[in-house]
Image 1 (cartoon, rainbow, N blue to C red):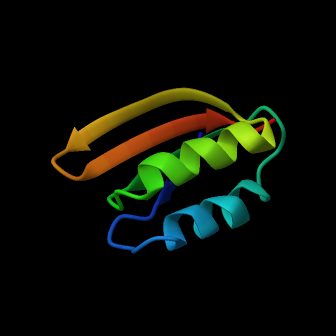
Image 2: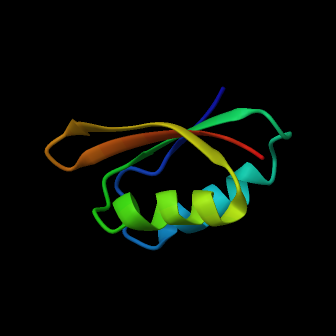
Length: 73
């Protein structure tokens, strides 16, 4: 599983980084994205759904920190 840590980056950079990073993965590989940008709680899952990637986990890690795991289509 690949991990992309975008904590500390302001939106839209967590989403931009995720879009770029997932291109380096093969279909079926897992990607975990760590982020602390509130806007990304909506934009990352929406992008994953639109692209056909399967979200397998989405959870709150702290007051303003989240993780989302997905499988590349």
